[in-house]
Length: 589
Image (tube, rainbow, N blue to C red):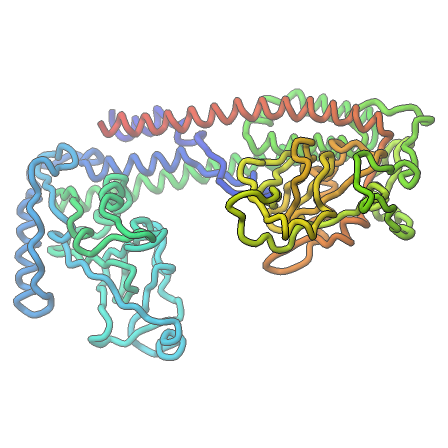
């Protein structure tokens, strides 16, 4: 099958295979990776270094002659004193070949086709004192100035070094690659001018006009990556110069190298267009979903909501085709729930009772805790704090008025201390409190001595927990089996009284309405958080208790359907990804 057929016959895989980027926190679901296009790029590069992109021409001078020319040039450079005599690379045995080569090609080691060296280390103090804004000289390229392949190096970084024997110089056409750390074997690029470079970079300066772009294309393949990783050592991960030099590379005739580079450029431009097209479609789809879901949450009455829902439902299969769009639908459901649009309203004589009269404790507490809190008089709720109208049987209340009379909203243990080897009290951190559930699989323990000073946040079960610092977005109801646990300072405990239904409060806090208030009240620069005084003062809509339970039942039902649909879409995306991988594997074998 030709390269063109591989692309066109599997176009749906290259354009539709996407995966969600891994990230944490609220609002992290909107980013996706175009993994289909990524797999297509991998396939193109692998085909390139195997001789499958362009036809072989028997009139081209074979690679063995080109490699002999490279060896002769290396000898001349050593004799002239430009290079030091290097240890001769280990010959490639017949079993070392990576795959069957086309006619006219040959395997060699990287050290056979170019001079490889690492650069110079410059301390931050010297950079600022000696080399920042130096007139003349050459740009100094560090790892941070190198991209991931076909992107240009960042030359205008404000650091230049003189042309002297203290600094190694890489000439135009040298191929740089990171040799150590998290970017090892990944960050790479080609120079277009003389540079000096950092000690965590290797520069390969080709012999005998070996095509730099072909070597760079090889660096970007899985074939190279596997060899690189096999040779890495150390805790932080790095590859020695000698081991890097020993990596095996397939070499085509010089003329074919240039044709391959030209074809790779052409096909990568096609990948760029496919990615842009897919990205534009996803963006347009996202705007459409936002707009139509907005008509639901902005409906003024039940009749208008039903009309808008009917309009949206007619295109349901077209609109909700991505995990991100389903997440937006879930947010719309939560928003409609807190606005009183999901269930039929109760009669006016079943109004929500006054919080100050009904917020009696719903759990057993010790005598030391059983003192009624003096909360003072809450400020009246201004009309500006009510962003939407609620049914007549509902009321607006400040969060603090809904808390149990003998407890308070509190954050937990400030310093957890060293985890005890035995015993201790399980303590929930912000990483344990997820959106609408608690993950107790990695809960750490705190010594009884430290925890005893924080009895106010010792959990009874039934409280609502909210992340107020760290990984924001987590809010969950405490199950009764976690009775006796405590919480860390990044987590706030909200012990609601009997006038509210815990699961309703979780859904309300998880809604866009509540999170808009939180985000507008976050304090801090690098480490933002929500003050408890602000949290206590937030105004929220409260329906009658029985209606709260009906709303939760309906909300959970709809969110459950969304989760089922999302799971099916996730499985479909995974299938596309696996099929794309299979096409690549079959094509190479």
